[in-house]
Amino acid sequence: MKILAALFIDDISMFENENGLTRLNLSGVQFTIAVSEPFPLTLAPHLVVLIHSDQESNGAGVLEVTYHCEENEIARNVQPLQIEPGLFAYRLIRAELELVNPGKVFAHCRLNQDDPMIVPLTIKAA
Image (cartoon, rainbow, N blue to C red):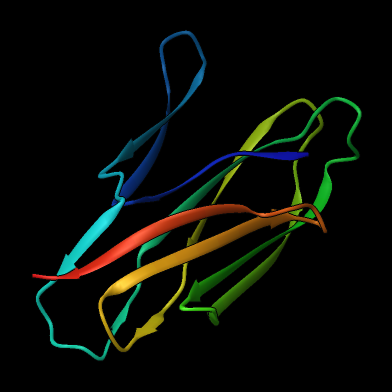
């Protein structure tokens, strides 16, 4: 199993087209968020993680996402995965991030004990 992509988004929808193929629509992909509230604040961005289970996989694994700000871990989500070998899946992660100042948050996404994919999100004051 491997992570194909991880992105901060506004919304995700899934549908089947006329050919019976499943489609995912991602909207509002974010690399920066401007907040109008004063700091400190709590922010809960949506992170989508796209995963592929190859044919040789047993389809079982663990997805761990940790959020880091200035060397500190500020949130963590761990969930078991069961994805049929040869297929794709997604997981939507929503963590509540306690932020003292504007800056960058880094989501470290990893399967099992693999190296993490690191996804940055810049938080700015509006």
